[in-house]
Every structure is written in structure tokens, then in C-alpha cells.
Picture 1 (spheres, rainbow, N blue to C red):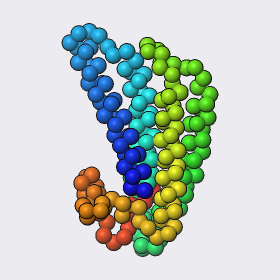
Picture 2 (cartoon, rainbow, N blue to C red):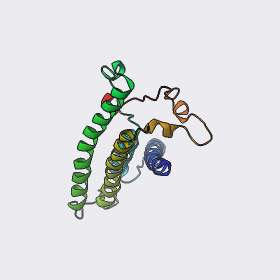
Picture 3 (cartoon, rainbow, N blue to C red):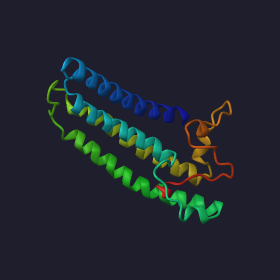
Picture 4 (cartoon, rainbow, N blue to C red):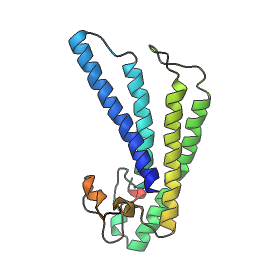
Length: 185
């Protein structure tokens, strides 16, 4: 599971890095030489879509969406887990049809291409659709983990005992067995 999460995070990060590099290069080329990278705008939008879907997969598993803890904070540990489970089921109920519809879009793209380089859009849409499927699959895995009493945030502590939650800016890992919840997002 950790490998799947690491791969998902890597895909999202690589595409975000690509967007940043292409945008910076395009600004430099435009300012210094009055030329643009062909399809930089369309390409950056398409690559952002890929990064967004793959990033959504990671956020779904770790319940890293925007959270509002009005109810969750006042519940006991068992009820927090129940609320997390309910929220995860609702999240997957939206993610699964969304993944289906993204694939429907991929299959109806036909021969559409980008404006300058004539790159087929189906490649970009296909990678984004894989990210949408990854979000649904990781959402189902979150439900499985919560149902069986495993806290998905425990994956934030690696084998060496390093608290990865603290390293990513999320503060110390929860010690009372509770996590944030998808209900909070």
C-alpha cells in the first residue's frame, strides 16, 4: 500500500514540477527572446488536470481535503471512526461515478488535438482518468482500513520511525488514534 501511495504522490508531484518548469521557461523565453513554447498554455492546463486527479487520490486516502471539525471534534473515538467511515463512503459514492464519467470523456475524445503541436488530447485525458480511478480505489481502501480498525494516518510513520506527518508540515501525528476525517472535507 505504501508503494501505491508513494507512486501516486510521485505522479502528482512530477506533473506539478513540470508545470512550474514550463511556465518559468515560457516566461523567460517570452521576456528575453519574444518567443513562446508551443502549446504551453493548453499543455499546462492538461498537465494540471493530471496533477489534480492524482493529487485528489492521495488527499482522499489521507483525508487531506479541506476540513471542518464542528461535529467531529466533539465525538468520542468510536463515533469519530464511524463518522470517518460514513464520510469515506459518501466520498467514494461521488468519486466512482466521476471516474466512470472521466473515462467516458476519454473514450469520446476521438482525434482532438492541441492547437500548435497537434498532441492528441486522449493521452492527457487518459492519464487524468487513471488518477480519477486511483482516487476511487484509494477511497475504497480507506473504507476497508477504517472498517477493520486500521487508521490510514498510521501510514504516515515510515519503517524507520520517522514521523512523516510532521515532515510534510502537518504537525505531529495524532497520538490518540484519531485522525482528521473525510467528513471534515
